[in-house]
Image (cartoon, rainbow, N blue to C red; front, side):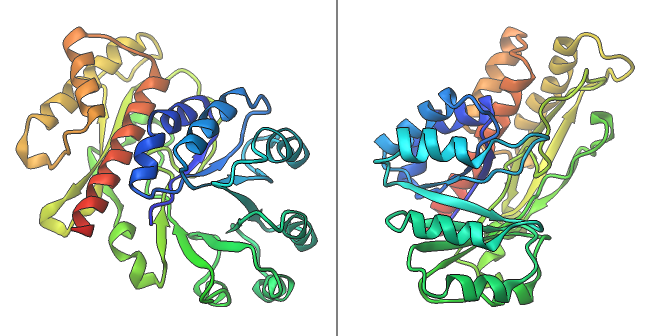
Length: 319
């Protein structure tokens, strides 16, 4: 039902490792796009998903980054190598504006014993795709990236045998952290995906769909935290806790503690609807210790919180 889309960066892969069992228990299906040519961390994460039999999609033709990881290296080292016996992995193929449909068909036929997820991300000729895959039986799901394809395009793939998944970015990035509002809408797709005629939904957690290798020095530190508002039918919103100091790129640790203080005050206010997750517990410990773990760890904690928030919502909606 829930298909979080993650790029295979360090802290995203740590998130997968830390939550492999929970993902399996809650039938959460991560979509993973490799962005590093060194697959060591990827192998560790996928090994744990395999051990817990967590279904996932591994994209074999990444497009993220200035120099995307090559399909040949993924196929040779992972699909035909380390992950050859990992039956929990569905192969993902991105159809973007410049895709060659014959490449898709080549891999569908080459890996007939593997399930496939086709990620529709800007390809325009739905009819060409439908004709090319009409006799293919190993396509498990069509994953549509919201905003890159229209409803008419999507309607061409309505069949009984393939699941339909919609991925929507809820995170609205700002050019500067100081520009974030305190609170804004994130997404209602977790509530409305069935109204869109979909079998499942996904997002990019609190990272957003725009891929960045790394940012420069931050003049302000922002901590992003999603929450469901029970008074608004569990519609999802996001807090942006921004440091007070914004005039120079120095002292990121001090700025983090400024932002963290705002987070702690919001957590202690029952009107904010913030779910008490393991990530929130960790934030509270960091505040008590006045410790700054680095921006990567902060992002990972907020991703952890979002994941637990989704699990909580799914558990409540299924009861």
